[in-house]
Length: 315
Image 1 (cartoon, one colour):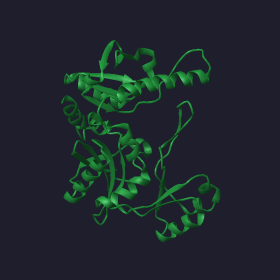
Image 2 (cartoon, one colour):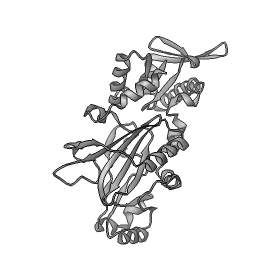
Image 3 (tube, one colour):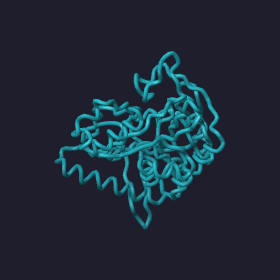
Image 4 (cartoon, one colour):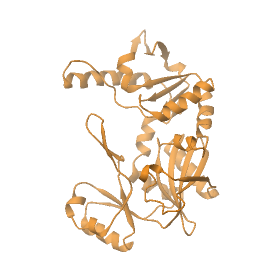
């Protein structure tokens, strides 16, 4: 049995669950935002069991877990905010108790591994140890240090979020998306901007092409992403990702081996990794997203990553 942990509005989970159904892979999808409405955990006779949508399971029945994109448990009702928060914590703790029964090797990926691997500073420190080249990068709150870095790269630097690429309210409503952006001279004139929080600044590599690499259990799909007829934007997610062209590329053997070793060290069975292949054919590692998007590559016909996931979850 495969347990899919996600949320109700996850289009990627919708896509893969259809494939799983068509391939007759037995699974239960648990949308954590609806768990309190249609599920519960019990501890009776020294055994923890999970009941969700009339399916009763114990940890031994779960052969694989796809940790896709769960959110906090939502508790509805007329109680106060504090009471709902406490009740949601009780629900979450009971579910965590059940999930703790499932060995880490059965997860793709275990949330503890995701949390460790997702930190950009940790990635930047670790990647060169595995032979991967990274652009020159600083994190600072100092205007003087930022200006020095900008001058040292002749103004060719970018910034991006250190944590997550969106701004959302406390109740989970997304207000804005934050993309990788070019840093111009006027951005470095107001000391208050950098004073707010640590900011990452990174050398803007003279790109030949962006490459999106998806890793599933040591299988590697590498796709060059370009926008013929116009300059590829700093962040390919600009302009709704319209007019992009995807072409399979081969990673150099050394880069591929180094990347797989990095994923193994991070204990990631799945990873979405961004590279830039520069104009002089150097490969620069940008970041690894342990729970990144991939379904859009299948849907535009550039890959069949779902096939690899189905095969992984069939075992």
